Length: 328
Image (cartoon, rainbow, N blue to C red; front, side, top):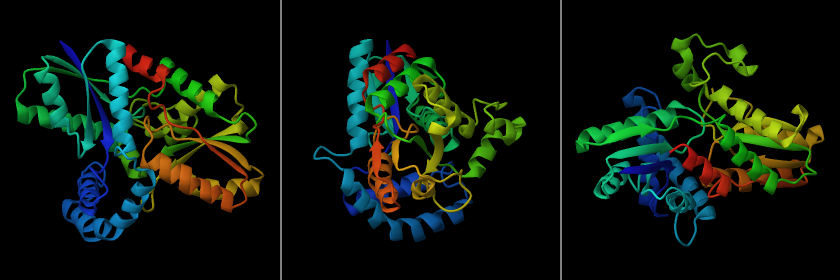
Protein backbone atom coordinates (compact mmCIF):
# COMPACT_ATOMS: atom_id res chain seq x y z
CA UNK A 1 0.00 0.00 0.00
CA UNK A 2 1.15 3.53 -0.75
CA UNK A 3 1.27 6.28 1.85
CA UNK A 4 2.08 9.98 1.74
CA UNK A 5 4.33 11.95 4.08
CA UNK A 6 3.99 15.74 3.94
CA UNK A 7 7.01 17.51 5.44
CA UNK A 8 7.04 21.16 6.44
CA UNK A 9 9.73 23.20 8.18
CA UNK A 10 8.59 23.06 11.78
CA UNK A 11 7.56 25.07 14.79
CA UNK A 12 8.07 25.19 18.57
CA UNK A 13 5.94 22.71 20.48
CA UNK A 14 4.45 25.54 22.54
CA UNK A 15 5.20 29.09 23.63
CA UNK A 16 7.44 28.23 26.57
CA UNK A 17 10.98 29.58 26.59
CA UNK A 18 12.34 26.02 26.51
CA UNK A 19 10.34 25.11 23.41
CA UNK A 20 11.39 28.27 21.60
CA UNK A 21 15.05 27.64 22.46
CA UNK A 22 14.85 23.96 21.48
CA UNK A 23 13.36 24.84 18.09
CA UNK A 24 15.86 27.57 17.33
CA UNK A 25 18.79 25.40 18.43
CA UNK A 26 17.79 22.43 16.29
CA UNK A 27 16.98 24.58 13.28
CA UNK A 28 20.12 26.71 13.38
CA UNK A 29 22.39 23.74 14.17
CA UNK A 30 21.57 22.20 10.80
CA UNK A 31 24.78 22.36 8.76
CA UNK A 32 22.76 23.16 5.63
CA UNK A 33 21.12 26.17 7.30
CA UNK A 34 24.01 27.79 9.17
CA UNK A 35 26.84 26.40 7.07
CA UNK A 36 29.86 27.47 9.07
CA UNK A 37 32.49 25.19 10.65
CA UNK A 38 30.79 23.39 13.53
CA UNK A 39 32.69 25.17 16.30
CA UNK A 40 31.83 28.61 14.90
CA UNK A 41 28.23 27.55 14.18
CA UNK A 42 27.65 26.35 17.73
CA UNK A 43 29.34 29.41 19.20
CA UNK A 44 26.96 31.60 17.22
CA UNK A 45 23.86 29.50 17.86
CA UNK A 46 24.27 28.60 21.54
CA UNK A 47 26.41 31.52 22.63
CA UNK A 48 24.77 34.44 20.81
CA UNK A 49 21.67 33.86 18.68
CA UNK A 50 19.51 31.66 20.91
CA UNK A 51 20.31 33.31 24.27
CA UNK A 52 19.84 36.83 22.94
CA UNK A 53 17.16 36.34 20.29
CA UNK A 54 14.76 33.77 21.70
CA UNK A 55 12.62 36.37 23.50
CA UNK A 56 12.04 38.28 20.25
CA UNK A 57 11.09 35.02 18.55
CA UNK A 58 8.82 34.12 21.44
CA UNK A 59 7.04 37.49 21.23
CA UNK A 60 6.58 37.07 17.48
CA UNK A 61 5.06 33.60 17.90
CA UNK A 62 2.64 34.97 20.51
CA UNK A 63 1.26 37.29 17.82
CA UNK A 64 0.20 34.38 15.58
CA UNK A 65 -0.30 31.40 17.94
CA UNK A 66 -3.81 29.99 18.00
CA UNK A 67 -5.75 28.45 20.87
CA UNK A 68 -5.05 25.09 19.24
CA UNK A 69 -1.33 25.67 18.73
CA UNK A 70 1.02 26.49 15.88
CA UNK A 71 -0.75 27.76 12.73
CA UNK A 72 1.84 26.00 10.56
CA UNK A 73 1.24 22.60 12.13
CA UNK A 74 -2.54 23.00 12.24
CA UNK A 75 -2.75 23.98 8.57
CA UNK A 76 -0.41 21.18 7.50
CA UNK A 77 -2.57 18.69 9.40
CA UNK A 78 -5.70 20.04 7.71
CA UNK A 79 -3.95 19.71 4.36
CA UNK A 80 -3.13 16.08 5.13
CA UNK A 81 -6.76 15.36 5.93
CA UNK A 82 -7.96 16.99 2.70
CA UNK A 83 -5.36 15.14 0.65
CA UNK A 84 -6.28 11.82 2.24
CA UNK A 85 -9.93 12.43 1.35
CA UNK A 86 -8.93 13.31 -2.22
CA UNK A 87 -6.65 10.30 -2.75
CA UNK A 88 -8.11 7.68 -0.37
CA UNK A 89 -4.54 7.09 0.83
CA UNK A 90 -3.07 7.37 4.33
CA UNK A 91 -1.36 10.74 4.79
CA UNK A 92 0.83 11.75 7.71
CA UNK A 93 2.67 14.98 8.42
CA UNK A 94 6.15 15.62 9.78
CA UNK A 95 8.31 18.62 10.51
CA UNK A 96 11.98 18.88 9.60
CA UNK A 97 12.58 20.40 13.03
CA UNK A 98 10.81 19.42 16.25
CA UNK A 99 7.43 17.67 16.21
CA UNK A 100 5.75 15.70 14.76
CA UNK A 101 9.08 14.22 13.74
CA UNK A 102 10.02 12.60 10.46
CA UNK A 103 10.78 9.41 12.38
CA UNK A 104 7.25 9.35 13.83
CA UNK A 105 5.69 10.07 10.44
CA UNK A 106 7.51 7.18 8.80
CA UNK A 107 6.66 4.88 11.71
CA UNK A 108 2.95 5.70 11.54
CA UNK A 109 2.75 5.00 7.82
CA UNK A 110 4.59 1.69 8.09
CA UNK A 111 2.35 0.70 11.00
CA UNK A 112 -0.63 1.35 8.71
CA UNK A 113 0.83 -1.17 6.27
CA UNK A 114 2.49 1.16 3.77
CA UNK A 115 5.34 -0.40 1.82
CA UNK A 116 5.79 2.58 -0.51
CA UNK A 117 5.90 6.16 0.76
CA UNK A 118 5.70 9.30 -1.33
CA UNK A 119 7.60 12.02 0.52
CA UNK A 120 6.48 15.56 -0.28
CA UNK A 121 8.77 18.34 0.97
CA UNK A 122 6.36 21.26 1.02
CA UNK A 123 8.75 23.67 -0.68
CA UNK A 124 7.92 24.72 -4.25
CA UNK A 125 11.48 25.93 -4.86
CA UNK A 126 14.75 24.02 -4.39
CA UNK A 127 17.19 25.21 -1.75
CA UNK A 128 19.82 23.30 0.18
CA UNK A 129 18.41 24.69 3.44
CA UNK A 130 14.91 23.33 2.78
CA UNK A 131 14.54 20.64 0.11
CA UNK A 132 17.97 19.05 0.42
CA UNK A 133 18.15 18.99 4.20
CA UNK A 134 14.68 17.40 4.31
CA UNK A 135 15.68 14.63 1.90
CA UNK A 136 18.87 13.91 3.84
CA UNK A 137 16.99 13.78 7.15
CA UNK A 138 14.46 11.32 5.75
CA UNK A 139 17.27 9.09 4.53
CA UNK A 140 19.04 9.35 7.89
CA UNK A 141 15.93 8.25 9.77
CA UNK A 142 15.30 5.40 7.32
CA UNK A 143 18.84 4.12 7.84
CA UNK A 144 18.36 4.18 11.62
CA UNK A 145 14.96 2.47 11.49
CA UNK A 146 16.06 -0.20 8.99
CA UNK A 147 12.68 -0.22 7.26
CA UNK A 148 11.98 -2.36 4.22
CA UNK A 149 10.01 0.26 2.33
CA UNK A 150 10.27 2.12 -0.97
CA UNK A 151 10.70 5.88 -0.77
CA UNK A 152 10.01 8.32 -3.59
CA UNK A 153 10.56 12.08 -3.25
CA UNK A 154 8.58 14.80 -4.96
CA UNK A 155 10.96 17.37 -6.45
CA UNK A 156 10.45 21.13 -6.58
CA UNK A 157 7.37 22.11 -8.53
CA UNK A 158 7.88 25.85 -9.08
CA UNK A 159 6.70 25.81 -12.71
CA UNK A 160 4.14 23.00 -12.66
CA UNK A 161 1.04 24.04 -14.58
CA UNK A 162 -1.38 22.93 -11.85
CA UNK A 163 0.70 24.55 -9.10
CA UNK A 164 0.76 27.84 -11.00
CA UNK A 165 -2.98 27.54 -11.51
CA UNK A 166 -3.54 27.01 -7.78
CA UNK A 167 -1.28 29.91 -6.82
CA UNK A 168 -2.60 32.36 -9.41
CA UNK A 169 -6.22 31.51 -8.52
CA UNK A 170 -5.47 32.15 -4.83
CA UNK A 171 -3.95 35.50 -5.75
CA UNK A 172 -6.88 36.40 -8.01
CA UNK A 173 -9.44 35.49 -5.35
CA UNK A 174 -7.74 37.56 -2.64
CA UNK A 175 -6.09 40.49 -4.42
CA UNK A 176 -7.19 44.09 -4.60
CA UNK A 177 -7.62 44.62 -8.37
CA UNK A 178 -7.07 48.38 -7.94
CA UNK A 179 -3.60 48.00 -6.39
CA UNK A 180 -0.48 49.56 -7.88
CA UNK A 181 1.72 46.48 -7.52
CA UNK A 182 1.80 42.77 -6.69
CA UNK A 183 4.84 42.01 -4.54
CA UNK A 184 6.08 38.41 -4.47
CA UNK A 185 8.06 38.18 -1.21
CA UNK A 186 10.15 34.99 -1.08
CA UNK A 187 12.15 33.61 1.79
CA UNK A 188 15.72 34.80 1.38
CA UNK A 189 18.79 32.59 1.30
CA UNK A 190 22.48 33.49 1.60
CA UNK A 191 24.14 33.97 -1.78
CA UNK A 192 26.69 31.35 -0.75
CA UNK A 193 23.88 28.76 -0.60
CA UNK A 194 22.97 29.56 -4.18
CA UNK A 195 26.63 29.24 -5.15
CA UNK A 196 26.96 25.88 -3.40
CA UNK A 197 23.92 24.54 -5.22
CA UNK A 198 25.14 25.73 -8.61
CA UNK A 199 28.92 26.19 -8.63
CA UNK A 200 29.76 22.75 -10.04
CA UNK A 201 27.28 23.16 -12.88
CA UNK A 202 28.63 26.14 -14.86
CA UNK A 203 25.92 28.47 -13.62
CA UNK A 204 25.52 31.86 -15.24
CA UNK A 205 24.04 34.61 -13.08
CA UNK A 206 23.22 36.72 -16.14
CA UNK A 207 21.17 33.91 -17.67
CA UNK A 208 19.53 33.32 -14.29
CA UNK A 209 18.36 36.92 -14.00
CA UNK A 210 17.07 36.87 -17.57
CA UNK A 211 14.96 33.74 -16.95
CA UNK A 212 17.29 31.68 -19.14
CA UNK A 213 19.03 29.78 -16.35
CA UNK A 214 21.10 26.80 -17.46
CA UNK A 215 20.52 24.74 -14.29
CA UNK A 216 16.90 25.39 -13.52
CA UNK A 217 16.45 22.42 -11.19
CA UNK A 218 18.99 23.78 -8.65
CA UNK A 219 18.78 27.56 -8.93
CA UNK A 220 16.52 29.05 -6.27
CA UNK A 221 16.70 32.55 -7.72
CA UNK A 222 15.63 31.39 -11.18
CA UNK A 223 12.81 29.30 -9.75
CA UNK A 224 11.23 32.10 -7.71
CA UNK A 225 11.48 34.53 -10.62
CA UNK A 226 9.88 31.97 -12.92
CA UNK A 227 7.03 31.23 -10.49
CA UNK A 228 6.34 34.96 -10.28
CA UNK A 229 6.52 35.43 -14.05
CA UNK A 230 4.14 32.56 -14.73
CA UNK A 231 1.65 33.79 -12.13
CA UNK A 232 1.82 37.34 -13.47
CA UNK A 233 1.23 35.98 -16.96
CA UNK A 234 -1.78 33.98 -15.76
CA UNK A 235 -3.14 37.10 -14.06
CA UNK A 236 -2.53 39.31 -17.10
CA UNK A 237 -0.15 41.63 -15.24
CA UNK A 238 2.34 43.80 -17.09
CA UNK A 239 5.98 43.70 -15.91
CA UNK A 240 5.74 47.04 -14.11
CA UNK A 241 2.80 45.70 -12.06
CA UNK A 242 4.75 43.02 -10.18
CA UNK A 243 8.15 42.48 -8.58
CA UNK A 244 10.15 39.98 -6.55
CA UNK A 245 11.81 40.56 -3.17
CA UNK A 246 13.40 38.43 -0.43
CA UNK A 247 12.51 38.42 3.26
CA UNK A 248 13.85 36.89 6.51
CA UNK A 249 17.52 37.69 5.97
CA UNK A 250 19.98 37.14 8.81
CA UNK A 251 23.13 39.17 8.29
CA UNK A 252 24.84 40.35 5.09
CA UNK A 253 25.26 38.53 1.78
CA UNK A 254 21.66 37.43 1.17
CA UNK A 255 19.63 37.59 -2.04
CA UNK A 256 18.30 41.04 -2.89
CA UNK A 257 16.24 43.17 -3.02
CA UNK A 258 15.18 42.86 0.62
CA UNK A 259 11.45 42.94 1.29
CA UNK A 260 11.65 45.36 4.22
CA UNK A 261 13.74 47.82 2.19
CA UNK A 262 11.35 47.53 -0.78
CA UNK A 263 8.37 48.24 1.49
CA UNK A 264 10.15 51.30 2.88
CA UNK A 265 10.83 52.71 -0.58
CA UNK A 266 7.69 51.93 -2.58
CA UNK A 267 5.56 54.82 -1.21
CA UNK A 268 8.22 57.37 -2.16
CA UNK A 269 8.07 55.93 -5.69
CA UNK A 270 4.34 56.64 -5.80
CA UNK A 271 3.28 53.05 -5.13
CA UNK A 272 0.92 53.28 -2.16
CA UNK A 273 -1.54 50.43 -2.70
CA UNK A 274 -0.03 46.94 -2.88
CA UNK A 275 -0.88 43.26 -2.79
CA UNK A 276 1.70 41.02 -1.09
CA UNK A 277 2.08 37.23 -1.18
CA UNK A 278 4.85 34.92 0.07
CA UNK A 279 4.94 31.94 -2.34
CA UNK A 280 7.95 30.24 -0.71
CA UNK A 281 5.50 29.08 1.91
CA UNK A 282 2.51 26.87 1.16
CA UNK A 283 1.14 27.25 4.70
CA UNK A 284 0.80 30.48 6.65
CA UNK A 285 3.29 30.66 9.49
CA UNK A 286 5.38 33.05 11.57
CA UNK A 287 7.17 34.48 8.54
CA UNK A 288 3.98 35.28 6.67
CA UNK A 289 1.54 36.14 9.46
CA UNK A 290 3.94 38.15 11.62
CA UNK A 291 6.92 39.19 9.49
CA UNK A 292 4.92 40.14 6.40
CA UNK A 293 1.35 40.82 7.47
CA UNK A 294 2.21 42.62 10.72
CA UNK A 295 5.78 43.97 10.47
CA UNK A 296 5.73 44.46 6.71
CA UNK A 297 2.38 46.22 6.85
CA UNK A 298 3.65 48.57 9.56
CA UNK A 299 6.79 49.37 7.56
CA UNK A 300 4.79 50.17 4.43
CA UNK A 301 2.19 52.34 6.18
CA UNK A 302 4.77 54.19 8.32
CA UNK A 303 6.62 55.17 5.16
CA UNK A 304 3.58 56.64 3.43
CA UNK A 305 1.80 53.60 2.07
CA UNK A 306 -1.99 53.68 2.13
CA UNK A 307 -3.25 50.15 1.52
CA UNK A 308 -1.44 46.87 2.21
CA UNK A 309 -3.36 43.75 1.17
CA UNK A 310 -1.85 40.49 2.40
CA UNK A 311 -2.74 37.44 0.29
CA UNK A 312 -2.78 34.16 2.26
CA UNK A 313 -0.70 31.11 1.37
CA UNK A 314 -2.22 28.15 -0.44
CA UNK A 315 -3.01 26.49 2.91
CA UNK A 316 -5.88 24.07 2.08
CA UNK A 317 -7.20 25.62 -1.12
CA UNK A 318 -8.98 23.09 -3.33
CA UNK A 319 -6.74 23.64 -6.37
CA UNK A 320 -3.67 23.16 -4.19
CA UNK A 321 -5.02 19.87 -2.80
CA UNK A 322 -5.85 18.76 -6.35
CA UNK A 323 -2.33 19.57 -7.50
CA UNK A 324 -0.80 17.49 -4.70
CA UNK A 325 -3.13 14.61 -5.53
CA UNK A 326 -2.01 14.78 -9.15
CA UNK A 327 1.68 14.26 -8.30
CA UNK A 328 1.22 11.39 -5.84
